Length: 313
Image (tube, rainbow, N blue to C red; front, side):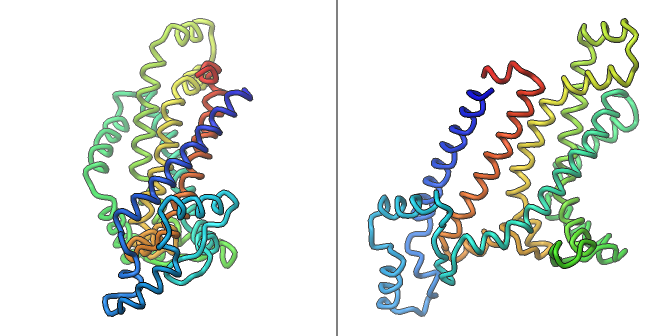
């Protein structure tokens, strides 16, 4: 188990290095001279040259990257080119907002997807199973921003159950925080619910026909215990989908945060991309990759506990 854990951590560190280096060089290649976006079109060549030197852009790219990476491994992501404030502080203010929405959406998707997946797996030809197939087609056909707007129109504007925009920190009001993240979380969770339920349903159908399940029933085990055995063997695919969906929800949070006016890392990514604030983009990339590595690491540990053969891969 120790070797399994070390291999996963080393692969995560390699992913972090590759992702940040690729972001660094691709951002410099795509943005070119960021002083134009930072100073505006009315800036003089002298002003641009002064800012160019202040930002250290006159040095070779490899030197710039090593300088950033050597500080980043110690938690220092540099300063923003827009306001010259520490990148770490700005990200720290935004991460709780995005994590609140994404974690709530993940838990909601896991709970509802588990319930629907088990129910449809036990009754594959029932009404709920047919409804699941229809929902999977409908939700994948509809764009996410449209679903978010529909939720706002119904539950915020017409029924006035939840606020349409804005975010209330948990430290200020627990009820206000819950109300402010409910609609964004539901908007993110809908497609994830369908995918998890579909994976569990398919897993139930596949595992339920195996010999060991018939043996358990022949030995007189209760339907509940047989269902738990089937669920354990059918869950790895759904857990993998859940981990992938968590990563996807981090990316999808950009659109949701814009629609619901949430001050998370999604809106920060958008503003940094518009003006070419590369230190912000690099810091956000590093933080996102760390979350991805942690989620995949936890997934591997859970899968290794469920199926010991995974530890040998």
